[in-house]
Length: 121
Image (cartoon, rainbow, N blue to C red):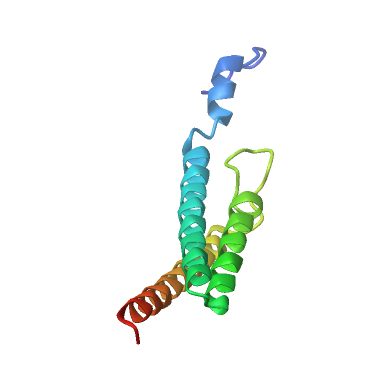
């Protein structure tokens, strides 16, 4: 909607045109939920590693949990205009996929180690 020459545009219309909507906030919340779940899973792996006296597994889980927490707090965009994304969406997606695969591998190792200990082998 364009203003007629000599008339100021209605500020309500201009504000609506500049409003990006809730999509950035929903996207940021989705990234934060993903990070929170991954950090929780990594802490569970670290706990299993500590309980089984597997230092490497415990340290790997703890490092992964800290890495995911750092990514969630400082790297992932906040969904607001005042804090721009530090990484592109493709880099965030690739990093999240890599961390998810690493978490799955560590979880599988923790499961096998736990079953091995339970069966007495």
